[in-house]
Length: 330
Figure (cartoon, rainbow, N blue to C red):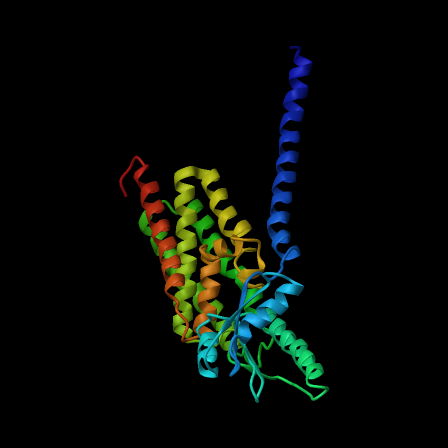
């Protein structure tokens, strides 16, 4: 091989490699962010139904399946109190009351998009029943059991604020991996930076914008736990696998975890399995837990606490293991 050919290869090889890598990375990111949103359709969205007439849920199920099969899953409850409790526990996104006082119960705090969709279902159902009753108006009263409040009526603050939640942990992790050498320093910065950032973030979302409405200190604990878990995992992965570990964790938490967190859309709108997977990553668990604390105090939060705690344990373990590889004891 001539020297000229070697020089050309040395010149073009990295140029082509970088160009191909950037194309693959950008295309992958675009796919992960755009695909769930562009193809978002409801699938087995749970909606409660209660009526003195038996088997109303199965009738509604058949009616809606004939239009768009599998979009909704209607669950029948014995009375209004049971249906209301199901909404408040986040077992269903809303409930339809079909009796002499027709009512649509929604929960904007769970998902503004779903609350609007269920309201639209009530409107369409009311039109159908009005025609069936010979023109006698059949109008549903709409009751929001988990309103997001007057400061942020569309619930946009938490959706927009979800990005800083994950970025905070990643930034702390990157800076910690670059500047800190001792394990004790990494644990300290994860705790202190997490607590300070969480106090500021929750103050903005709760006290100022009104996008959160739960106990301030409990919400600070949630955000601080999420930041600490992410930052320790980033620092541990970087310590074990250097740049590859750093990029892998950032890719998992941000590139994959952010669009699948179920912030703007319910998990039932994502391709099968993707939305559920997103709930087992830090951001998905964190946002879901914040929603429950703010608007659904009766809802079970075990899974979210366990998920965030598990990631914290993973982060601690990775930092400890990365420290064991160092030649000098700390």
